[in-house]
Amino acid sequence: MIMEKEALILDMDPGIDDAIALSIALTRPEFDLKLLTGVAGNVAVEKTTANLLKLEEFFNRTDIPVAMGAKAPLKREFKDASYIHGESGMPGYDFPELKHQPIDDPAVEAMHQVLSDAAEPITIVATGSYTNVALLLIKYPDIKSKIKRFILMGGSLSGGNVSSVAEFNIFTDPDAAKIVYESGIDITMIGLDVTLKALLSNQSIENVAEIGEVGKMISGVMTAYNDIEAAGKPMHDVNTILFLLHPEFFTLEDHMVYVITEGPAIGGTIADTQDRWSNGKLNAHVAVDINTKAFEDWFLAEIPHMNQMKDHPIK
View 1: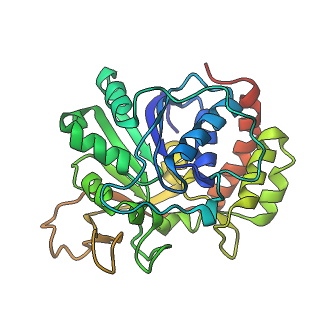
View 2: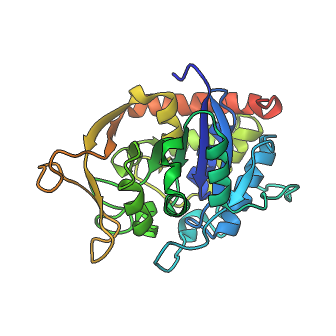
């Protein structure tokens, strides 16, 4: 467990699983949330940013600045995943009309300001495409020293979910992902190798609806979630927050990971497991397995905690 508050910037594209990851982060005293940034991914950036604001208001955490980021990938045409996450990105629960707005600064400028002002390096958690992060590294290369590490949801060593090799976040903006993986900053990759094992059963989704307003919200959005496996629904982005709290639940391997940016394997993340090209260099701690029972037990225990913290927000 984290003994001291960890300063975080969360870069997200809610999106249902992002929304649940953020819900937990907003209610855990282990985190000092410095900034939330929206990016185009599951739905358009205007919607992902609005969803960040909705969740802040739901959990009474409007103290955290929210900035709108990139509207499209660096080089590719933007294609959303509304067929999975719904038109709004967060269907299934009736959030009230927004009462506050994002800050005026765009995401890259807001990230740069927060990092520059920080006394110690800050962890960036990215659960959407990495466009905002790549733009930050392009425009302000000297800021790298102020980034403690990246915790990234994305990629896969075992096969994709939008092609035979590509996971959605990487596929959405592979050029941005390549920049991030070549940055030299410490990276933990939380990809499909574990997130397709970290499932919430359909029965559990029904049961959490009875645990206060938070349970009702989470059950509602999860019921509307069209990402379905035989044993339940995957909680992809939640695993980044879980890793920060309980890294012992995960099995990691260190690899040199390459991002494919063209051709039929575009968006693929390839580990040089035979050291054919990397000459012993490594750039990522890759999560390859997870304690699935510990995951579900932990998640279900978080619902009553979130419900309590909704009425007694962190100050």
